[in-house]
Amino acid sequence: MAVLPSGESDSGQPEEERPQERQELTAVAEETEGAKSKRERALAYQQKFREAAHLRHVRLYEQAWEECLRRERLLARRDIEFSVQYNTSFGQEMRIIGSCPELGEWDVERSLPMMWTEGNIWVAKLALPRQAQRIEYKYIVREGPSKVRWESGNNHVVEVFVDGSAAAQQAQHEQSRRCKDSWGCGLG
Image (tube, rainbow, N blue to C red; front, side, top):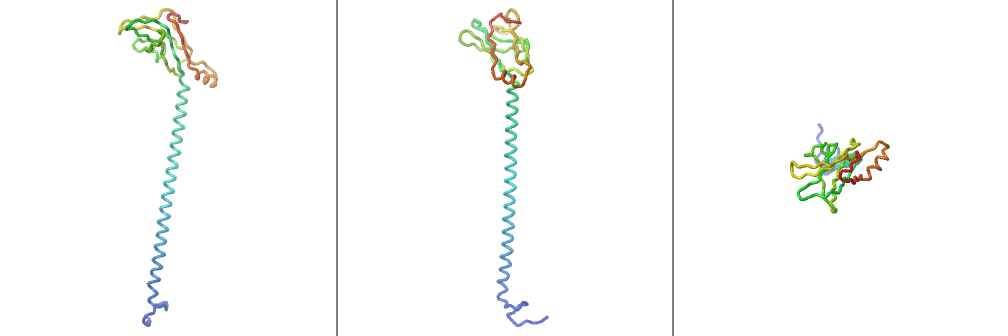
């Protein structure tokens, strides 16, 4: 191994320049670590952005699905308003009973209570399912748990849904059906 005169390095440069070289190499290494760290942060932000965008899409699809279900439920049901004029006495309650589950399937205990309105008109509103097509019903007056007076005569009948095109069913659905009846005047 050759002995170098004092103050010189292997490259022939004075030794005092060597620390500067080390500083430059350290600075370059720090810059590459800084750039690497910056790139990693950028990738992490991109990943978070992609996840947030995905969650937004999922929420939008869920909202659209809920809206579809809401519309289907609306189309699958038909609102019907029943009304009858009847003069009751204190303690009497007017109810409607009929052939579908919503009207109690002819069970007095499950019949639908009606609300009194001005002019002694009793009203009940009901949403019936698409499966119901023809419903028969009667009005009853209930006084206490055991005393019930049934409407005489034939049963009243309502056609809830008719077969037809989707457009016809939509038009039929948009109009709430009103059944204005008279006591004892069922058409059977």
